[in-house]
Length: 135
Image 1 (cartoon, rainbow, N blue to C red):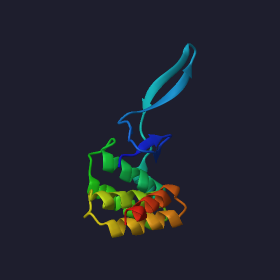
Image 2 (spheres, rainbow, N blue to C red):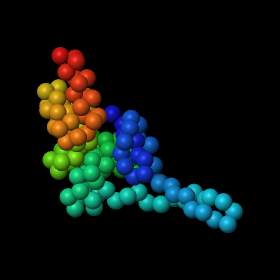
Image 3 (tube, one colour):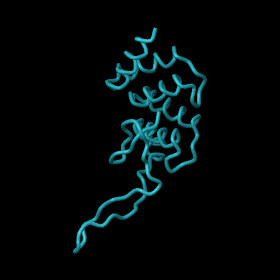
Image 4 (cartoon, helix red, strand yellow):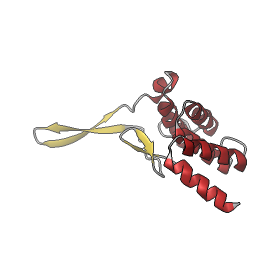
């Protein structure tokens, strides 16, 4: 499931993570949009920031500024989930539901959605309810 970037954070249903990020600066004649580098999610993740791992996973899942690598995305979401990031758990659950980058496993997806929900990630609760409704 693609992700969306807003203010450097992964959210929503579609990824529009630009290969070149844009910021606005005020000039004498108005606003000017200038490219800037994206946040360094790699160093955040390497430093133990679970949210950074989740955001980096979304980049790999969708090829946003990096080569698309769904297995790497799954590893990063796993790292995020183990670090207490509910979003990482839910996104990893999505990969297990789809069999993307990992073997398809509805039972594992359910466990991950449950964990995401327990960690306060509302989308995980919604995904869990939808999944249980299919049984």
